[in-house]
Structures are given as C-alpha cells and as structure tokens.
Amino acid sequence: MTDTPAKPVADLSFEEALRELESIVQKLERGDVPLQESISQYERGEALRNHCDTLLKAAEAKVEKIRRGNDGQTVGTEPLDVE
Image (cartoon, rainbow, N blue to C red; front, side):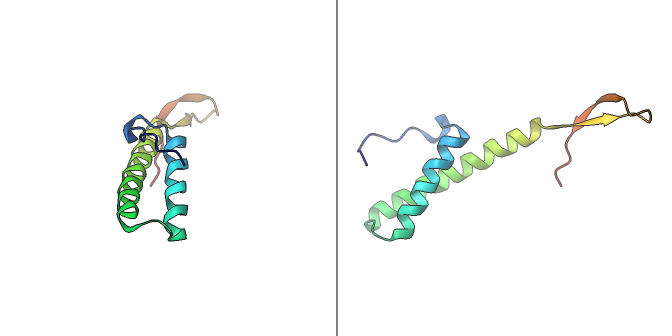
C-alpha cells in the first residue's frame, strides 16, 4: 500500500467509503497491524461507517412510494415508510 494521504471521508462516495471500510476491517482482522496504526485505522473506519450511514439515510429519504387510486391509475407519490 502506498503512503498517499487518505482522501477526506466527506469527499468519498458511498462505494469508495465502503471499499475502504472493508479494507480496514480485513487489515484489523488479520491482526498484523501495529497497535498505533490499528487505533488510527479503527478511528478512520468509524468515520467511514458514519459517512456510509449518513449517505444511506439520505438515499432512503429520496425514495418515494407510488400511490394508486381506486381505478389503479397513479395519483401521486409519498415518502416511503421504511419502518
């Protein structure tokens, strides 16, 4: 792995953040990372997880449910109830 500076978490797309998070989890699970680096990686992973969660919640808020009238015709949309 190169020593290029990590891109700010807020600038990552969902897919980029998820890939990086998966990479961090794999490294930490192997257990061959020095303690100080493990702590840094864990903190970065937590920030990535929070970023992914925020992006998912924003995407869910944009999803709409199509409403149909008694005749089966579309009459509009409403927010999707995810609960």
